[in-house]
Length: 256
Image (cartoon, rainbow, N blue to C red; front, side, top):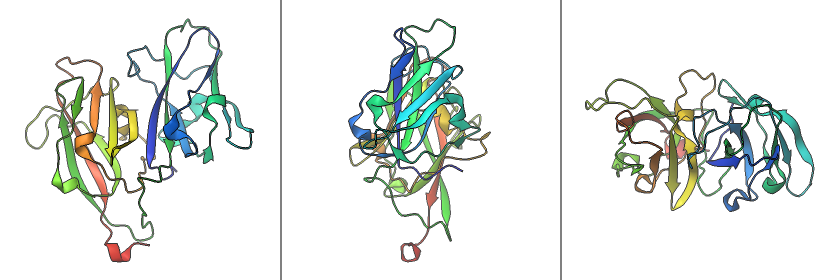
């Protein structure tokens, strides 16, 4: 079962010839507890590099402070199976964490793309899981450019979101064509000027075939500071992305 998360950060790892690729130092992730990490099978990374799949590649994670390799040579395709993400719950020493590629394919100049799901104390809210109540609101965005910001929506102000389900009906309820091309799109969500979701592949929110959904810890969104990026602006891209937001509707006086 996936754990509650309050942040997600997309990381590009470029293959330059050595079969060992270390993660970069990411200030936003320093001393943050990592719940899950997964590698994405998308066509291209946000910078436009061709993305390498998950075969013949192994992850080694070094824990901050202890200097211990708490994960050693784990095949990266085991990190997420049918949406069920491996629970890690450690603080990474990212520059000492790395992947090793042992495949035979020529991948110089290509990249791996990882998403690190983590705890962000500035964004999470207490969730009542013993007697939860939810409501569901639609959220949509018409893609117009390489980067398109969400419009302000007063219904979402201070709402505590538990998940965003990406859907692919032919048309939205107001008659707009719905986008079904996701592998070349990335979403960034912000709250109080903090981008707590950074360039997360949009395809991860298409959870219809997953046994286990994403579990957000009651996250609020500043929509006007949040956006979707697309690598191309073809006819298939310039359509509407349609979500259903699952929102915590538990009365304040019954929260714990």
